[in-house]
Amino acid sequence: MFLTLVVIAAFCVTNALANFTSYEGYKIYEFKAENTTQQETLEILAQNDAYDFFTRPRIFGLPIRVLVAPADQLQFQQTLEAAKIAYTIVNENFGQSVEVERKLNSMYPKQRNAAPGSISFDVYQRYDVIAAYMEELAKRYSSRVKVTSIGDSYEGRQLHAITITNGDGAANKNVILMDAGIHAREWIAPAAALYVIQQLVENYKQNSRLLTSYDWIIVPLLNPDGYEYSHTHERLWRKTRKPVTIICAGTDGNRNFDIHWGKVGASHTACADTFRGQTAFSEPETQALRDLMHSLTGRAKFYLTLHSYGNYLLYPWGYTSALPKNWRDIDDIARAGAAAIKTATGTEYTVGSSTNVLYAAAGGSDDYALGKAQIPISITMELPSAGQQFDPPLSKIEELASETWIGIKAMAENVIEKYKSAIERKKPRKLRFKNVGDTQTCIYS
Ligand code: 0X9
Ligand code: ZN
Image (cartoon, rainbow, N blue to C red; front, side):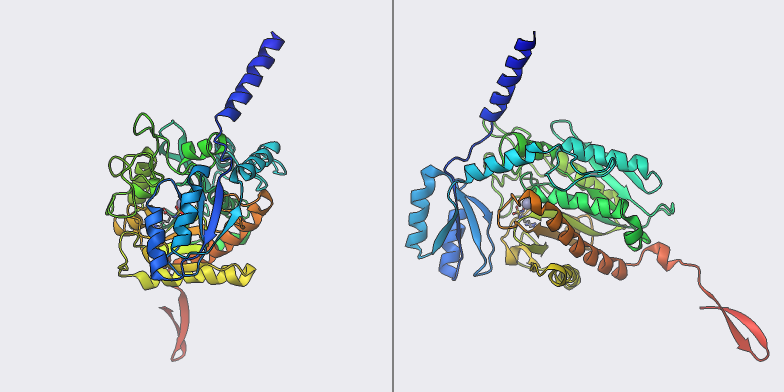
């Protein structure tokens, strides 16, 4: 009996490993576009689904990184050389790096160093641990924290949203709405969202001013199926997991929102990484976020979606190079975030509209928040890579998350100041006393 169990266990482990995409021999190239001709060549290359463009800034001189499979490398290099684009190979064997990260990440007990009811930032936590942490917070801090499910993922995982308040019971305060993890492989984003949750809940005393007139609603893992898949099967998985054809599964959640859906920068090929979906809102995950946004219309003033990587604070529109009417307001807030981070750690962020500084891509949640759900400040934050694309080393998770929190705090403070909650506008007016003749008259100011 024991032997049978051992054999079954060994088979399962081997099988799980066999199912893990190896990326053996894949190389990561880095280069910069220095002029319009080079930029055009890169845009043509980026249309080829065989090349995985990790980032593709439109600003000349910013680094672009691409992952290329062994069979495609020669042609890729020749195209760059023909366009006189100088490149370096920053990773000769991506497969090896993935293997190292995977071993390290699974080596530690998941809650290492974390006190009960807390969470640690020394590994990339899995769905179950994240869910358990949120449930525990709701139990321990029941007057200030509520955890709800805003829907189920395709594979049936609950999409948890945590509502954090100061516990004063006031209804209808303004809201800061945040999410992370719509793109499965961007592991640092859910980690940073968890850090925000930890700060607002466990470190409440220090951050209570952020909750006086605003509630925060955070969905730290919007695409749990994809996230789990990127841990167990394919490190670079980006999309959701609902099957589309017999061969290909998954839709890019950030191309699936119904705002100029599919117009630009979104693929109609099911196997592509930027597949827009069979219809707008074809995915339960994007439907859930859409419904949450609409349920907060009028209250939500700031929508922040965390991604990685590249150090950008992006705002609408993603479907056109034109800017929204209130772009100056959004730009001011994003710049306040960037400045706070720069002062604290020296890390620099590029700020601008996503079409103008990164690339045009329609159907994003940020465009939808502003254009359809009327959330006036809508920002996409692309976190840093710590030199390792989607794999910041485990030792850097906490540092990156706390740096990100500094930027988020600064942006939130500015939003709170700019859009006063009804609760503040209706504050009881102060009584003052004024001497009128020799009597004291009570007046309101
Ligand atoms: O392409 C994206 O969805 C985002 N970049 S990422 O590398 N994390 O995939 C940028 C989204 C910017 N917003 C819109 N295009 N709407
Ligand atoms: Zn992303």
